[in-house]
Length: 112
Image: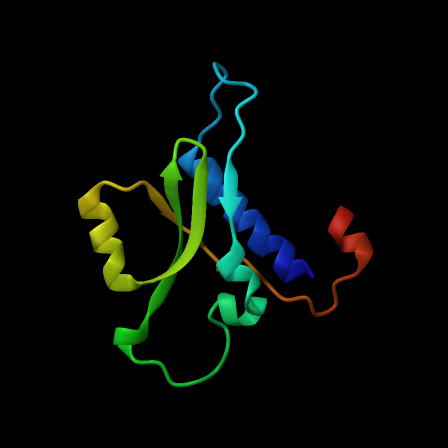
C-alpha cells in the first residue's frame, strides 16, 4: 500500500510541475488521467519486475499535458521523449525511485 501511495504522490508532483501554484487562479482544478497505470501492478509500473529487457524496449512514464486543464499518464518509449520535446508538448517524467518497500510498514508509520 505504501508503494501505491508513493506512486500516486509522484504523479501529483508531476502534475504540480505542469501546473505550478498560481494565486491568480485559486479555484482552478486539473484532471490527471491515470487509466494506463491502473491496468498493472505497482511493481510492473515502477519497472521493478525481473526479466530480460533490451535497450530498445526501455520506456518511461510521463505525464503529458493535453490542454489547459488535463494531462494523461502514459508509458512511452524513451525515444518518444525526444519527439515530445521537439513538438513543444509539455510533459513531466514521473520518478518512481522513491517508492520504497511495503515491508515492515505499519499503519502508524503512515501518519508519521
